[in-house]
Length: 98
Image (tube, rainbow, N blue to C red; front, side):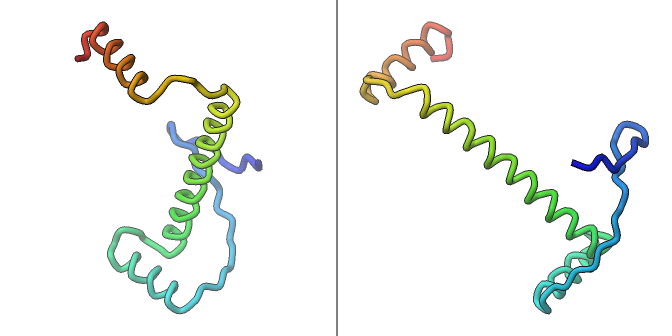
């Protein structure tokens, strides 16, 4: 990953790279509406926010996949759901949670 940022105060400030993109007419209208709502100051800000959200979602999906793989590799249990629930409740009672 290219480290193209500097610190101002505590938050990193990333350098902006000028980029030209084409969007469909409906998407352009939606971008304009986002800016007009005063939630964003520019179309670029909207696009950057969407990219940040997509990147965050991708990291969350990768984390979930990793956890699922670990769970699958840990093997299966022989206990029945009712037995598991009874054990969880008993542990909760012992811990003072029930």
